[in-house]
Length: 317
Ligand code: TRP
Ligand code: ZN
Image (cartoon, rainbow, N blue to C red):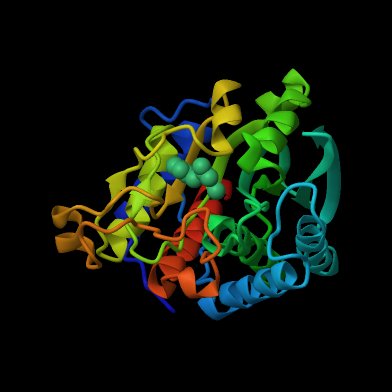
């Protein structure tokens, strides 16, 4: 859905200054108004995001019902994402590791260009649990990050900073793939990462709109987007640190992200402001066989995919 975000003029300059505060060490004190070089973030077509989810569902169905670490459904998922990225012109890298006696894989996609001393990363875990296809957890984040990357290519976006997208393996076994990636970065390459944005469960069927409260400038960028479309947000508290941003945060990288809720129940106050059903879990199919393409709220998926694109564009220009 096309959404117009009324962040223009002075507001856009304020956003640009906030981003500059985060991502550069240069002084901005007393600076003239930020240049109006803000590239408009694109609308990510939710139909495209959903088409990726349909592919993940088919992959699970053809591979024993899941896309879990060490199973055929995981490698098929990775090959699907990698094929799209390679065709679009990304430089892809598959990083392998071992967990629980099985080989796991991270997929990293670099968009050629930009300042490699300032890397903006967006990532999501691509593995499901063994009990189901994992379409909300975490086909949703994986599909939205993929569509954002493909939109970078489609629009020929050439940001000032360098863009890197990641799909992590074995998150469900304890953040194994993302931790492996962070542990194997040299300290110089770790220091080059200006920010890591995480997307894990962003289409919950009874959704809340939760923003991680880690790096303040990243948090503000997401909140600006939701304020612009008139959707209230809350800080993410359902098991803080339970996803792939945690290893980055521990290593000192600024992090942020979005989440629409897992097994915790929506309160009456939350239902009053977001709609949906109070007293019911945000995702009743969390880690269950019913986490299928029917387990997605399209409006939540659309809003979060567009917020993702907004943050990637705003923080990388
Ligand atoms: N991936 C998490 C899991 O499977 C889901 C989750 C729970 C989560 N709490 C979270 C993701 C908070 C992001 C933020 O356990
Ligand atoms: Zn998850």
